[in-house]
Amino acid sequence: MQADPGQSPIGWDTEPPSGVQASGPCDLCFIKNLQKQAGSQYYDGPQIRESSLLPVASPTPTSTVCSGKEYDIQTGDDCYKISKSQGIGTAWLLSDNSLTAYCANFPQNGKLCIKNTCKVYTVQPADTCEIMASSNNITIAQLKAWNPIINAGCHNLYKMNGTSICVSNPGVAYVTPPAMPPLAPSTAVSAAPVPTNAKDESNRQFTKVTFTPTKPATTTPSPTQLSLALDTRDDCYQYFEASQMESDITGTLYRHQCDLAADIYGVEMSELLTWNPSLGNDTEASTCSFEPGVRYCGRFYFEPPKADPEVGPSLDFPIREGYDTNCTEFRDVSKDFTCEDVLALFDLTLAQFFKMNPAVGSTCANLWTETAYCVKSPNAPPPATSVTSTSVAPSSTVPPGPGAPTHTGQPANCVRWHIVEKGDDCSILANKYFITLEQFYAWNPAVSNDCRDNFWQGSAYCVGTSDSISVSRSAPPPSPTPSPFVIPTPNQANNAIKECNKAAQAQEGDWCALFAERNGITDAQLYAWNAALDNGNACGTSFWKDYWYCVGIAA
Image (cartoon, rainbow, N blue to C red):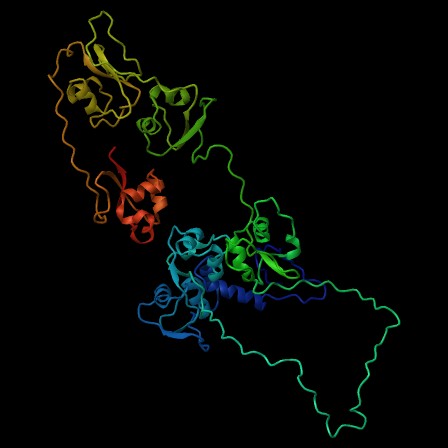
């Protein structure tokens, strides 16, 4: 029986090749693999430890000779605190001291070797490789080269929240060696003396004899792989030879051969130069070429092909059946949404919504949440804008009709109606038609007393009956003087401009651009309305979690 390593991209042979002795259940390679997994807090580590017949020893700091400086572990220390205080990447700290991954069973005493020091940065929950590289003024290639724990696609950052990574070259900084003294001349300047104890006739002049082979030599050179260019990485995924880039790029957008190579391998110019230092480090250089006879790194990492984009609307919920077949836009209706919420959110009237989605019913009583609905169709255009007259209609034997869907319970002697538009509420209607709120609720009993339920845009509501139409007020009540807008706390002193009338709170993982996008404003508006951000230059130092910032101003 052989030790089964489990799932493997190269498969697993149950039978060994001919002439190879089969490994037993105690195969050392298999046991070492299990031991490594058992030392981790992730994946199958805890399960493997529980099934082990022997206890898994806790790691201790390395006892080998330290090539850097030693650090005594203090009470309350953990790998995160030590990484920050000593300026070393958390992964480097664990690797240099042969400790378990992800700080599992981190020692509480003893000494640690600190050698691969660097400028460190603490990984945040919303960080990506692009964000970390940009905020620290380095390239993504440098970020990955200085932190080998980051995988090729940067897909394992969620495991590193709170850890320290290197944003400068780890280890001892490179020092240019001093200039070497000039070498002694290799050509003799004087004749060598003839030894006095030489054999007879050995000091005679030698006559050069040229040997001519009787037959030309015929040898077949064996194919050899070209060596790498000076300082080029030796662990790249793909390499190329200089001769492969000898193409005529006249009349193209390529400045030089390096531009061509970067485009062929789908990488940034900065990455190509980082992997091949002999090409220089100036991404804006007007010339760049490859030395014949050597190989260069074209791509350091493997990047799987991107998935095909989704076809059709990107929705979280299924589309409700029976929608208008000419629908041009669908949108999700989330849990706890009411029909009033849907009409207000998508700026629709009840008649429009019903025409595009007949399944909801004419009164929207059959609305299903966590379902997608049609919200735009040429068959349901918005109603024409009209000014509703507030004057009393002349007496007539036929009272004016509502002109839009109504609710149950409205009086039969209603002679004045109002079709709700965007921005209306019950108080606005009462003041507009010189009635009291009590009258409005009495004539429209389906509307809740807080004006939240069954008060829908596009529906008609009674605002005057035949026996109350003579009741009026000489003038509408005076509008209250608006109070000045106050930014909630915490906020930064003298930050928001005086015209600010809307604020939002920065959340965990926010940065300036994301915060602006979430609040529907541009980066330029965010900087103009918040002096503390210094036109964006202070986003890395003065944009603080849980603080309030201006996201709107009075027109």
